[in-house]
Amino acid sequence: MAKKHVNDAGTAKRDLPEKTCVSCGKPFSWRAKWARDWDRVKFCSDRCRRAGVSDGPVEPGS
Image (cartoon, rainbow, N blue to C red; front, side):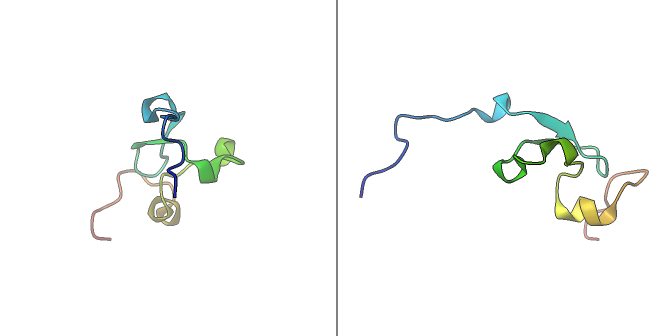
């Protein structure tokens, strides 16, 4: 079976749009699954989305 996209490097991760998570404050990059609603994406992960907007970073292990 032939490999797909052998000569196509695609888009470099550094060239993707980036936002800052409103919960933890860390930067995160665009993902294909967010293509339709990138303007509405606020959180970097489900964990941050469940935690909501807080005053500080999410505590590890919670």
